[in-house]
Image (cartoon, rainbow, N blue to C red; front, side, top):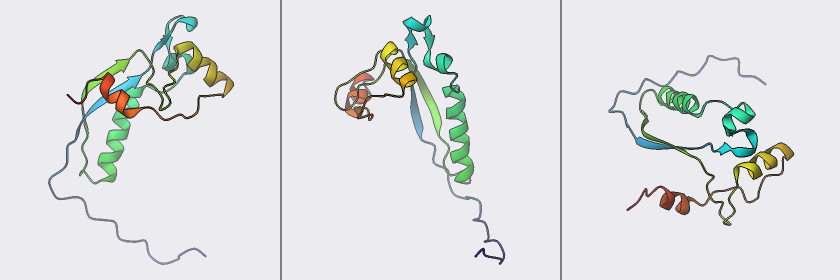
Length: 123
């Protein structure tokens, strides 16, 4: 049965000092030779990753009442795919083929330590 009482009182707006994490945005969106050098976002008509990142940041800021204010301080567009946890790495062609056939590599998780090393994130 639905609650027919009054709506709960909304949380008060955040009034403390906001947190402003500085982040690196890494976009894996390689050009695919067999598709005329177009990138995955163009081939599949996917949303613009920069716009999605801005919307996500705005959503976090709104839902946290201004507490979280992420800042993208560096942006890298990688022309290659990250290694998976088992060492597998897509080529542009193998990714397009897998996506179109709905037969993607498993396990799907990337090797985060390898990603950190690839971008020299910790020295």
